[in-house]
Length: 253
Ligand SMILES: [Zn+2]
Image (cartoon, rainbow, N blue to C red; front, side, top):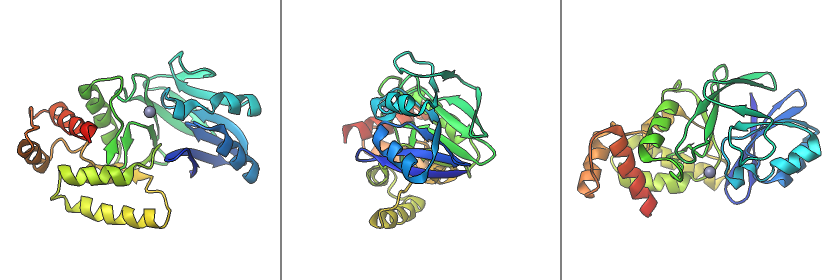
């Protein structure tokens, strides 16, 4: 699958899939850079894919639909205007000939969904899972968000994780506080530093990589449990407890 980022705002990526002269974009918060890219590359906008209702993911939908007549797919949430096809858990949707399975992943928002293409191993997960981090839990609960992340973490390890923000360096610096002995994490910090120094995205990551370094998926890690105890933040041993303690810690910073 041909996937490239269109940078938007200060740290958003609008992911664009291109196939035979047609394009699909994920979470276009701003129509301007999308229209510019379509024109520069001579592409027709076929589909807009939405993961959740936040404005920095949906702000461009109205203008893009009016200008191009594209179709819009997204969560079943009346707050999002212009959705043509609403997606729920387990739905199969074809975009530019590629089959995506819809996964409901509530927590960051209650309407949040992700799109998974098994053939190519591609996941568009919006603001649920980030490189080295996860979205803030605005509408759901910590246990709900932990369940959603667990669901994503069960995808094949080679699955490419296309999240919507370049938050990686801040996330990894927090991850180092949570698990200072993780050597995979230290190596990944160096890799990502080099990419940012060259102005390259750190996204996509993979599920396998995230399982090694992301403190929000590592509720099984004895080192994280020990660190939470040392910080006086340990409230229990269940995955939801560990996740909640780590998420609460990050929210303070
Ligand atoms: Zn969001």
